[in-house]
Each structure stands twice: as structure tokens, then as C-alpha cells.
Length: 339
Image (cartoon, rainbow, N blue to C red; front, side, top):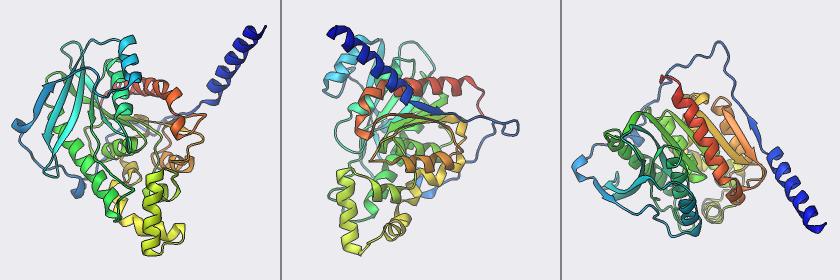
């Protein structure tokens, strides 16, 4: 009886979780044909030229981060893909590290550019890369530009770091489109949290990005910085408030706006076709609040938006599900004629 009751409770819980996940889909109308939307050049986000001969490509193991979740996923899924470390000249006269996974076969394969989360390891972006290559997508993930918000004393720090990440992603794209096994007509961007915000900004300024899925993201960076419960963000916010006497939300947002506007996905939302976007977020997110996701959703033209019944740090049980939804979204977009 106890065992059967436990099974029943588990089944009921699973059903409740499934029912709690909801999706709001964008529905095209007869007067909304698919036409290329202009991607306005942004001087601060133009990558500049570099010599392709300076790019170094090195074979590497199929798992980079030391993490049992990645090891377990690799054990239970196909390992029929190639893995490379890519070192290229960065926009700040540094060297940028990326990792490229390519499915078996000559291709050309669609490719997804991935960004990492705010801090910690790169397990999330590597897990996303593994799940995508398992579904036939090449995945090019960038290593983090360290933000170190807890130590930052200037409002320029987030903007400069985000800007460097976008510039280097565009440089990586310049190289990726020349790869014989990758399809330059089927390129997407994706990420979680800060990685998703960067990926969406990249899509807004980069015409070669045709589609994307973005998890736990929002728009209006000054408001996100003001509301976020993320510890480094709270420290950064408090330091600026004390230094510049920013006692209200309006004062803080007005102060931050000029610094982050050029890297805010909200700035470029109007340049993105809603049919090409999938948003995934938690109903109880306290790092990127639901209202900031909703603001972004509205600015993007109300694309498909799927919500799961948990918070920012509780994404783990829904992670593979979210990536699976993202891959299906990319399948649909890439099945349609470009432009």
C-alpha cells in the first residue's frame, strides 16, 4: 500500500508539473509576411578585422568541464561528434577561447552560438552544447568574459564586458561561416540567464543569426540590475547607490541607462521577427523577474513563450526539456525559406 501510494503521488506530482508548464505562442496573421528586418549597424558592436591565420584549432576531449552531470549525459547519449578548442584574437587585443562540437558527417550542419552564465563553471553552456550536437546541431560556445560585479566600482563595467562578449562572438561568426562543415545560412544563438541576454543582443545586431532560444532572460538591464536577487548584482547595485546617492528605482535606472543601452536586448527587439524566437522562463524567477521577461516578450512582438513552475536556480529539472524545446524551435525555423 505504501509503495503504491508513493507511486501514485509521484505520478500526480509529475502531472501537476507538466500542467504547470504553459506556452504562449505567436500566431501569424495574413498581413504579417516573413520579410527581412533591418539590423541597424551599431558602431560600438562592430567586431573589426582580424587575420584568420591567427585562429588556432585544436582537437580536444568530448567533455571539457569536470562535472558528473556532463559525464553522465555523455555516457547515455551519442558520442559520434568531433570536439575542438578554438583560440582566436579577441576584440580587446586578448585571446578568446571557444569550443566547437560538430556532428558526424560532412554537413553542412546548422550551428548554434552559445554564451555562458554570469559566473561559476561552464557546465550549463557545455550541457546545452552536448544536447544540441546530439540533435544534429553544431555548437560553438564561448568561454566567459569575467564580469566580477561584486568588485566592480564603475557603471561601465557591465557594458564593457557585455560589449566584449558580443564583439568576440561576431568575430567567431566571421570564422564559423568559412567552415566547410557548417551552414552559413542556418545559424542560431542561445543561452541561459546572462548568456541568453547576450545571445539575444547578438541576434538583434547580427543579420547572420536566423533564430534563437533564450532561457531565463529579460529586457531593460537597469531594471534587471535593480530587482535582481543575484548576490554579485546586489553588491554592485548597493555600491553604486551609496556612491551616487541613488535612493529610488527611477534614479538608479536613469543613471544606468546610458551605460547599458547599447548592450540591452530591449534596444534591438524591434529588429527581430517574433517567429524566430523562443523564450523559456521560470514563473518564480527572482534573478530575472517575470515582469522583465514579459517586457521583453512584448517588445519582441510576443513570440512563443514557455514558462516552467520554478525559479531561476531551480532550472535544473527542466534544463534538458528546455533545450529540447529550443532544438524543435530551431528545426521549425530552419525548415522555412530564409528571408
